[in-house]
Length: 198
Image (cartoon, rainbow, N blue to C red):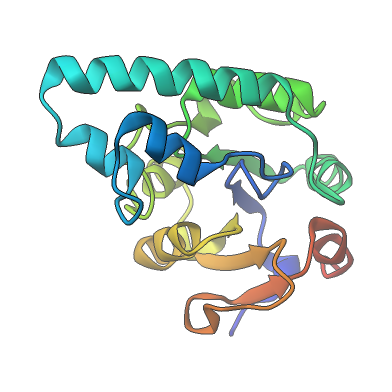
């Protein structure tokens, strides 16, 4: 691998299901918005006529706001982020959610003081994952090469984003790893990941 976790000081987290307990019911959201179950929500909305897309985005934002306010931290997430912050590491968020809701979520789980406002990127600040644009944006802002960064998430989109950017990847909050070819490290939860810091 050529690098241990100890050598990585730039950490970018997915939000839902990574730092928080997953509460999005994606099949229900797709039913409500008339999106085929096999389609990506953001991709589908982007392809709609402007007026219909705007109306459905507005519904999605309101639905997600309610979820954000009720966010609960994932196992070990608060302790992990606080530990990284105490070490002086650079921390970012890259989410397919809206940026304003990412702030609400961070506040709800008590971690809003660990992330600089400009280092929290939502779906409107960068092309959504799995596109690497957001990760590359943070690399530029932090003046660091992507290979010195790590993308942490609970889904294939996060891992593909990290790989495409040239960053390291960590899969968390899944007992088994269905994507070993995309994963540099795997931890069943953030508590186990914290134990891997060294």
